[in-house]
Image 1: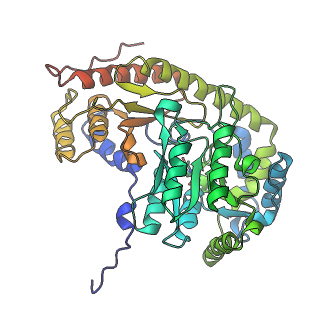
Image 2 (image 1 turned 45 degrees about the horizontal axis):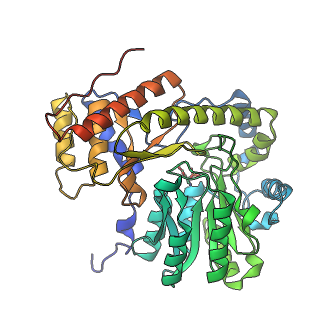
Image 3 (image 1 turned 90 degrees about the horizontal axis):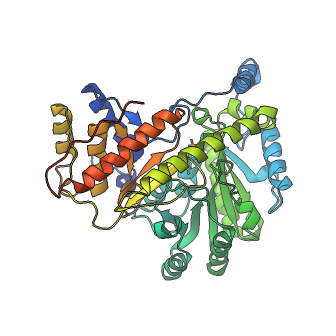
Length: 448
Ligand SMILES: Cc1ncc(COP(=O)(O)O)c(C=O)c1O
């Protein structure tokens, strides 16, 4: 090309959650039966869509208006419904004009960061959901600016460190929270959330709260909404239907904007997000029409309760087994459907292996891990995948230096989940010991 046509931030856009599927697909061709524990799609994992929900969607598919464009911000009746829902719960009040719909939160995330001035940074948690850190880094063409979530303290944000990093980095204009959190499954306590608001107020920042897992909370916890604790600080909450209905294929999410009137600069920024959406016309119509009907359906709460109970149970099973392993740090999860496990410092190295019985699979993993700069946890994940078929995501791909992995709690078959956890626990032990003597074979799981 006459001039370089690649965006400065292009190298920042990578998504290991899906990259690993390509490796899994190759391994499947060699006859390995893969269990996908990497992707947060309840439907792909076999959760059934309730008949009443299908009837609502089928009914809407029979209406001509479902096939047309809708207003840029989203269908007015749905925004009125959502604003009312927010206001009924107290906290900051919003109007339908404070809501903008997108084609999935993924789109909202790329627009929210993409429309920031390139020198204005949003400090993101570490680890965090890659779409946030990668989109933020791509907008700035720089490495992400991060604050730690502490695995030794239930994965809560280290607010002392957050304050320090905000104070000494004047380009930070906003703080991101993901609550309940992906990838850790943590639900943050109100005191910590209020401290984060104080930092934002002190340094004149705005807040972003990704609340896509807002209603997927268990163990008796409740996730506080940004609207509950933001006070008069400007901010926006990100919400959607991919996880809670679940309907990720709808590609439907929205942002709720709080206190835009309190800061003219924030208000202009929000207007630019809306203008960008206007250039694109609008988001998909039919899922927006379905939202009030689904949320108001008498079976909706029941189906959410049933799913929460299932995640709580699987979380307990995984936690009780994984915490027994020397050399790993695991926290009980309280929300979303992920668990992140950390290997203690020095537990992993680039000599550890698992026995891979299929020669082609072994050759592939050896090739994929031959680069000495391969992260140790990525190496573990590849060996585990080829040796057992369990497909996890390395923790270092969530924008952290902590080595570990993220797994999902989505398996609908509890007996199968127990077998996967058994196999995982055994494999971790074998892997960690594999450089201490002979390379051991992973024991096959006991048949139920
Ligand atoms: C924290 C978080 N935010 C946003 C998204 C994207 O959701 P959507 O399907 O609405 O694009 C995900 C998907 O996994 C997520 O985990």
